[in-house]
Image: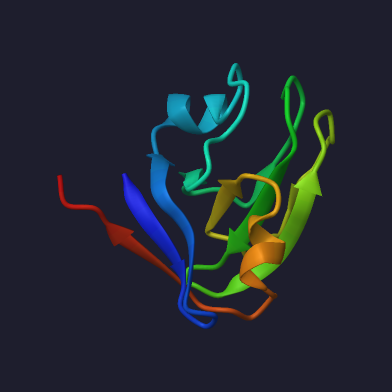
Length: 118
């Protein structure tokens, strides 16, 4: 688990964010889930595009480059959308709908991923 912070806005994007780095975990993503909890999220790395096929709920998606800069935003991304992404992205944050708006996140903001101590 990691915590993801928008350093530019001094806002927590996800306090309990899962990380998907293996081929299987990246491929599965959020499939089969009913929702994301408040404060939850999924960081998929490496990843520069996603699809919403077979998803049961909408998400906010933030695409971030290798320098931690937001390069694309997809607020309220609906289920069954074929493509969302950005060619310069290194990873994507999948978050509950409303996080982008609530944190005023915009393209160009700096994102920091912090390992949580267990």
